[in-house]
Length: 126
Image 1 (cartoon, rainbow, N blue to C red):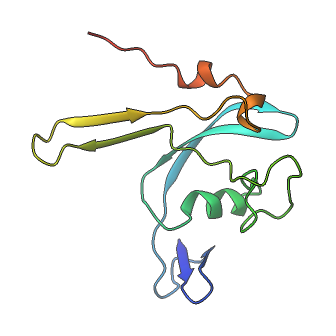
Image 2 (image 1 turned 90 degrees about the vertical axis):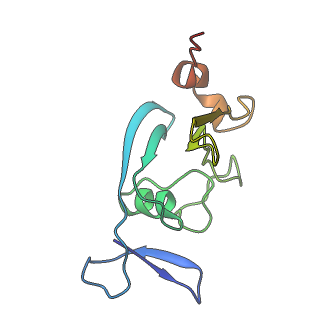
């Protein structure tokens, strides 16, 4: 469960009995590890404010470049290493599922540490 402290613009993991707390669920999968950092795939089942950042920090795996929720600074980047590689939603009129995919810049840290193409490879069937 997550609770947003509006006055501080900070979200924290709290007991489910906390008044105003909202259930927050995600699935994640470890894709690759290298030099003390990990590439993970996250599937959000709920969409809470700062959810991925807060939950990953809570389990001891803060996001690279996360100055707000990370416990230690990463001297190799000041950019938050959080990337939406795929978005899916129904078209507002036709209701057909629309899919948008985009790759991070694989020449920029931390993305250049991993085989992004292998993990985000797209196969298009005609």
